[in-house]
Each structure stands twice: as C-alpha cells, then as structure tokens.
Image 1: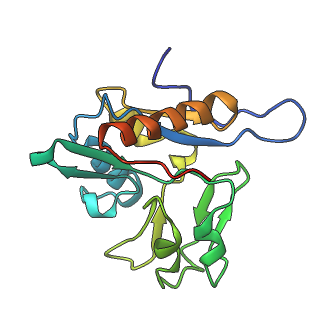
Image 2: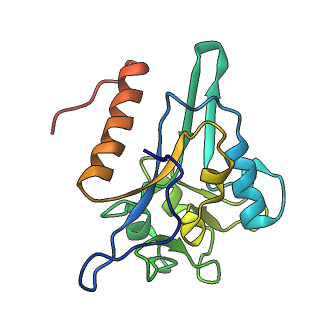
Length: 178
C-alpha cells in the first residue's frame, strides 16, 4: 500500500464527507523531526519545531520516540473546552482553530488527553493539525513513510487503534478496560 496517500478529501456517496486524520507508524519513525520542520515552514514560513502542529517526543536514552498530532476526535474535548468557539470543523470535517477567535487561554491544551493541540509561542494562539488543507506537509517530508493520511472509517480507525496498541505494547503501557 502506498503510504503517501493521495491528497484531497474525497466524499462518500451522497453528501457526507469522510473524515480524515494522520496516522503514524511508530515502528517506522526514526525521530528525525523532518515532519516538525515541514509543518513549521508550511504554517509559519519558519524552521521552528515549537511552532509545528506535530511534535516528536523523544527520550533517546530509553529509546522512546513518539510523534504526537491531533487525532481529529469524533467528540473533541478541545472544542468543548474552548470558551470562544474558536475550534470548529471546516467544510472537510477537519477540526481547525480560528486564530481571530482564539484568546490563547489554553483550555483546549488542557482538555486534549492526546497532546494534539498546543499554544504557538509567537502568536500565543492555539495551533493544531489541519491536514494542510488535504496535502499534509509532514507526510511529504517523511522519508520513512511513517506518516499517512487515513480515512476515519473502519479501516482507518483500525489502523489508528493498531498504532496506539503497538505504542502501548512497546512502552509497557496498560490499557484500562471500560
């Protein structure tokens, strides 16, 4: 399967739109951080990983490399926590932040249990992955095909769950039963 999937947001039959998100194959990620730089350049025209919408957490002594990005949650806690309504789904069903409405309070950052949203250190506004309008710069920059765009249907959700399961297994994390 081609890991660098086609750009664009295809529509389901009828009028609804398939939701998309980034999926990361942690077994392929080397921690090179090219994704962070590509994202930073795409969104801010600067090489500043702190302004990236994807973050690579590393603890090299323990061999931990964990890319973190917005999962485009079905019921986003960040959106619920935003007091100004700055976080919304756009016409492609991608969660985005309206910088004109964001007051930088950080409620969204505190609400996101996955670490998928941050405050830009320059603008002091919330930033999160917006899939670059359908052609994510991080996917193109990843030389190891560790990042792909998945459709949040059955296959995409299984692929994302597999990735989370692999990480939990690798790092000895235990899942709580509901």
